[in-house]
Image 1: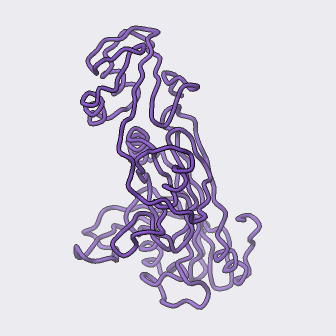
Image 2 (image 1 turned 120 degrees about the vertical axis):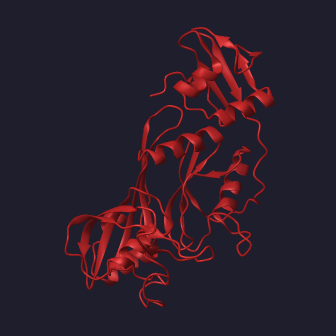
Image 3 (image 1 turned 60 degrees about the horizontal axis):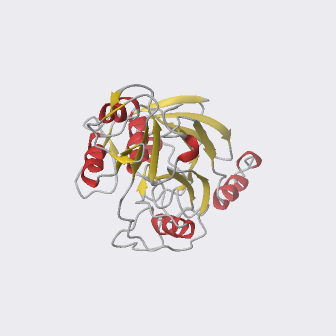
Length: 310
């Protein structure tokens, strides 16, 4: 737990830190609290560092008992807020975790300029009277449902990105795949490669980056299996590519499996569980998102048990 942060004084747009020794502010922020050098440079330019209420610089010295305040002054993200009925499953000073429904793009594009998760999050923060710049910590394909983490400030985004690189963020997916998986558990360790710059799909190829997916077989169904999958690496389409390569593509996956499934109209893949350390305080946060209705119905069609996932 990061005891330097003063819990009852934290806001999304400010940090309050109680100093525990004589030290230079810059060294405290980098060595103890994992602020990035880039963010400290921004603080210096914006003149938004204070010691006991008085303006200070990153090179200023502080002593035990001093209170450092860092104010966040950023332009709000320019997304138009839209009430899209997206469920918010967790929120604090630094983060919003949303349960993204299927068929929703995370971030606006030329072909999807509204109706995105970014629009839904903007609507939510507008109602709260906040104005953070939206930063996605993880992303999901349009037709994959489940948990997406949004950082409210650059510190939270930087810290969680570091944690993801150190495999300290737990991400578990549920997928319903074609065929019966005989193994109860295993590891899919296949390199993933993008053949051309304009290619949407990926392939397993020795030229690719090492990619590791851990799986457990939760249920064996009528000609299908329900799997739990944990990502050790985070390549584009990793789960979909790995499962297709093993001969067990995700049901409904038009890109890596059989097109136009009569059972479900998108890939049956759901970001079910996520675990991470709260960026400021270090508390472990564990969240789950129930299976969406189309995957519940698919499980029922295939004779599976659904009570554990809704």
